[in-house]
Amino acid sequence: MTLYYTLVFLLLVAEMALFMLLIIPMPFSLKRRMFTFLSENPIVAKIQYGLKITFIFILILFIDSVNRVYRVQLELAAATENSKNTAAVMGHERLEVQARKFYSQRNMYLCGFTLFLSLILNRTYIMILEVLRLEEKLKQYEGSDKNTKQSEKLAAAGDVGEIASLKKALAQRDQDIETLKKQASGLHREYNDLSDKYAATQDEGVKKTK
Image 1 (tube, rainbow, N blue to C red):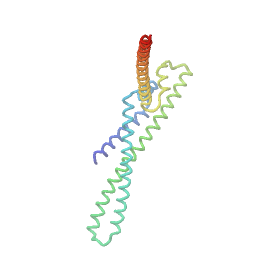
Image 2: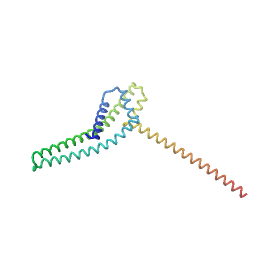
Image 3: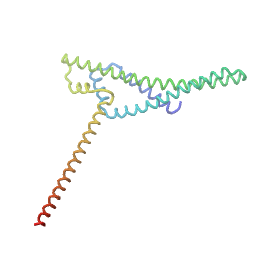
Image 4: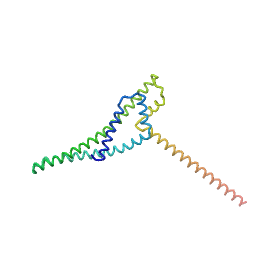
């Protein structure tokens, strides 16, 4: 197995472990903290962004593996129909083509299951988040939940790392606003200086004419 297919396999194992972590029974408070952590942590947001790029490359590998399986199927059919060679040569050709067919199918299934499990993980995360919100509302109606801070975080939680990315965008916007304010104040000072200089030159001109 080549290096990139080994990395795909490790990613598939990580997805399986994460899926088991999502569906394992946990206390409500612990699961609520875990989901709010996934939504707020900026490191998780960066990891999610990197995984999106990784899944694009895995999709390319999947398409390439499907193409390889199709070509090997054609070669195997051609080797089967070739009846002019000897039986030994025919058996050797079939064995080689079947070995390449096995590796191509393995790579196709590996990439396909990795992409499919990523979609399942995303959907499972959203469904569990909705269930947690409903449980949170039920506890609020019953008056048994007093952790309002965690409740607000859970209500604002969305996709993995979404809150962290929104906070980063908000901080960038505030920084842009502060920069514009500084530029505006600098332009205002320059305008006042130019106005004072212009008024001074006008006063000097009036004195000279007198």
